[in-house]
Length: 161
Image (cartoon, rainbow, N blue to C red; front, side):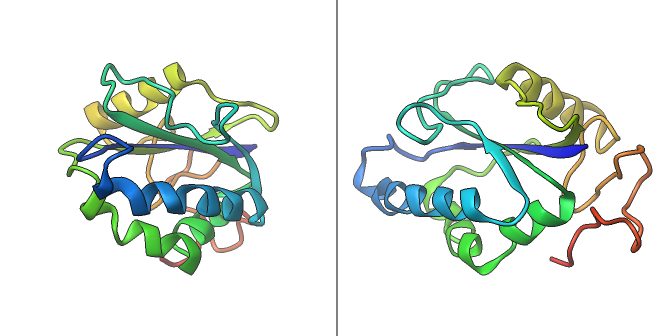
C-alpha cells in the first residue's frame, strides 16, 4: 500500500500577479525536491510539470496538489522538512484561509494514481465526518489496516512534526 495526499489552496490573486511571483518561482524547485525525496512515487501534473492548470472542487480559483508516497512517514518528512517548510510558512501571504478541510490523506494500492474526482470525494468525506480510514490527515493518521494512529513498529509511522 502507498499513501495518497491532496491539498487545495485558493490563491489570493491570479497566479501571474506580483503577489504570487515568489510562490510561482518556488514551485518548480519544491516539486523537484519532492520528486527526488525518499518515498516519493507520483504527483499530479500537466505537460508544464505542475498542476496549476488542473481544476476541480467546483472552484476555478483553487490550486490542487496531489501526490503518492510509499508511507505516511515519507510524506510527513517531506511536508514538515526544511525544504518544503519555507514555502509552507509563507502560505498565508499567497493563499486565502480555508474554512473547511483542505487536505486529505488515504491509502491506495501500490501503482495507483488517484484522480481529482477521488480527491474531491476524500476531502468531502473528511469535511463531513472528520478523520476516518477513508480520509484522514497527517496529524490524525490511520494505518493501512484502518487502525487509528500508527504504531511505533509500523514502518509507515509518521515522523514527529
